[in-house]
Image 1: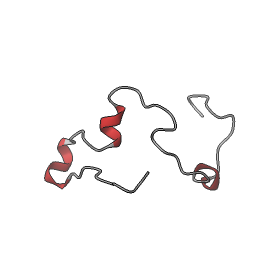
Image 2: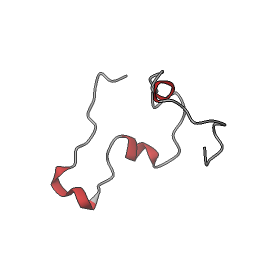
Image 3: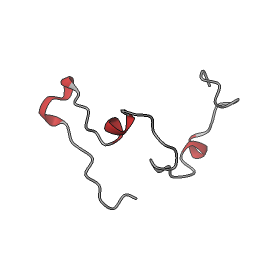
Length: 57
């Protein structure tokens, strides 16, 4: 709402009504690294994982 993308507060059912796929809308530059969990977060240390899903889409 702050970004003025919607005019009203969405209900959770509306937010999750449709599954979103990463290639539906092109992600800008380095965002792909965040999507695939390739950006390391110092606070997580060795507990980080990389998204290795093969059957997700």
